[in-house]
Image 1 (spheres, one colour):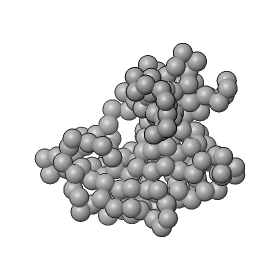
Image 2 (cartoon, one colour):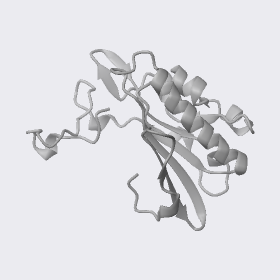
Image 3 (cartoon, rainbow, N blue to C red):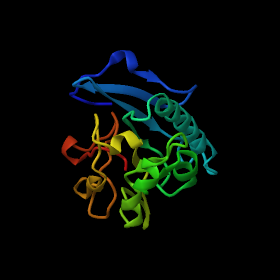
Image 4 (tube, rainbow, N blue to C red):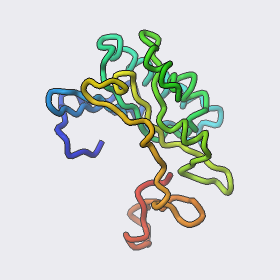
Length: 191
């Protein structure tokens, strides 16, 4: 998690066992924002989606615990889910939807707002495999992010940034240490 805002180092930790899930907490004006950042298993090694479902289940259980303790908790879940916003890992396991009213009224049966789902429904993508589009990078928030207390989100401002893509829609990959391309030709992500 890269930020210029103050981080509560005591709240930074890994979530789950042997999973790539990081929890961090930013605090501004005594208002905490919990961020859960994760990188789920690739579709290349997890053809059925079972491992991505496990990531989503682990995160959902953790965030649900946070919101049961504090229903107004401001939590942002983000990362490379390696699934689209309408795949079962996001909708059934993570309980993420684009229905703001359902999220606000979800109570102990937590639902999260997936800010990327409306974009996906409007044919926005961040990676293409040939002509097939995908939107693997996702941002979801708890009901606490939809009130006027502490941190909040403006759902309609979420977007896919196409200027970081090549003319064919593929992202400008960041590359690795052996990449011979000049830094100016590299991008910020692989999708």
